Length: 299
Image (cartoon, rainbow, N blue to C red; front, top):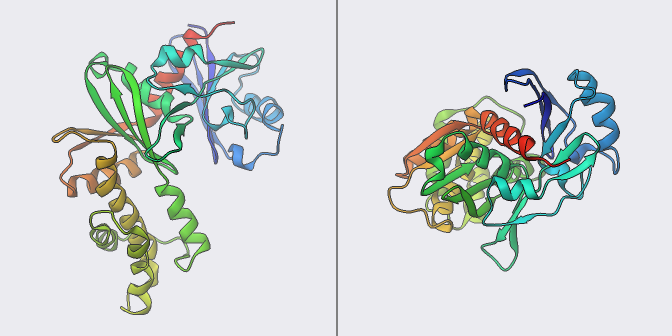
């Protein structure tokens, strides 16, 4: 395999790696170039003028996944329908220029009349599956925490359906633009657990959220604990309700994939709900998926 530049280019951040011919990572870096921060038509120029030079990757072929393939990014790449595996994604690859390919997202039936969609998580999930042949057998349930957390059902190596929870975005919006707005504060584990308990069965979330305000103004709680309490409440509500929405089989393991610290927080809350979970490295999964798709691209 020739050396290449791999990128997971999301709404808020761009994560890039230069991968050698033998698969070793030579360089890696984060860029504050999420597509939500770019002007229309700007992605190609900034990729060429900033990302490639910083990564010492001029002239290398590149493969990119994430929101860069949306109508906000470099080139809109159509969603592929579920069920989908890596071969399905490879069929949907589109060239952004002579040296760069963009991975498609996925679409499936949603829990309402609207469909559900993802961009970027499919590469991590299927990269995780590809990293161990045993994972392509039978049923796998993956939770991918983040701004828009994905709960993904994989059957025999194919993503068959998924459900999105806007948990991370709710935390951000409420903390910046509501009566629950707060300054950044150190994590308070005791307050976090109080928030998890306040989530109950996940129902009536709009009513439960107000407790984050009432505990301060009516109960004398320290407002510095609001971020921890809100985090616990939101993750607790998700952990209590999403397994039902994806029909999680009794006794099934949930594989939590992504950032280590956030995944550990999810694992802990799931354990409190009686659900066994294992944490897996999201970066390794993304590289596995991008490398597999790079090998599959067509000139």
